[in-house]
Length: 329
Image (cartoon, rainbow, N blue to C red; front, top):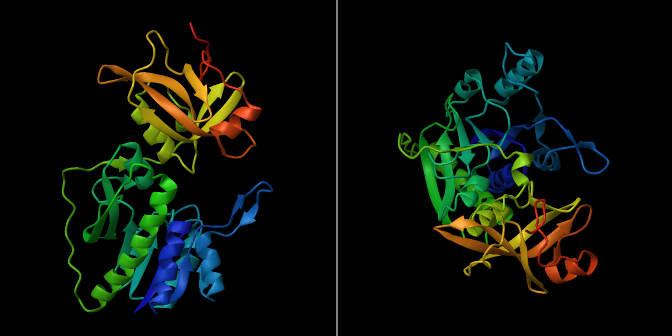
């Protein structure tokens, strides 16, 4: 089988490598244009482009695919490259561009998408983050036959995986990337012999995983401790959960919700106790009882992630301080 691959970040790179290892021919890769990255903001190729070039695969980087859009010239060049490739299918994983109908219709077997959720739950841009943030017990990967909607196409294969209490977006991402890579190879093998069955997505249970906004990183200490803890894990590695301490911003990378309620009268964000094992902070109410969150890994602006005992040597915190602004009453 011969395919075109469209993807950009590391999640997609894993799938491309699995496809190549399985002996599937990939004459053309589509990926996003090079972007400035790093401290020097130099143009950097996407992980998928780097993988493709390492394997001698032709790469196209159109800024758009609409033949009547702003980047019509790019789209026309991409169309010529796609037609010349003569692929049986296109595999799409976190590509970053909406595929117009002419692309969906071009390959004989259509376009197959690797989506990191159990559809129809968490359609959209940030399914891994939102599943952790919502406290889902499980997630998975759906191989989907793409249509013109936003992750609305028929399901071809699905597989579940539990979300562990300590999972972050980083750890879950890697697990789902491996799962997606294995599943897309299986899906193409089945497609080659007519063994794929398309199942329409149910109308019930649709949720949308909206793109992560940097503004969401600020911790709202009025939330219950468990809700804050989930957001800390969901926003690792990006954008990170942060709080202010006076004029300084601190990122929280690991924490542990505690069962006991804080002292009477403690306000959300108030530091209750500090020792080498953690910084205990009062949070909002959950089921009528206030909560406490123990912060265990912190980072100053421009610094490194540090266990609390190391962090406190250079940045003393004390009971009575209030994170997120203000002072204890």
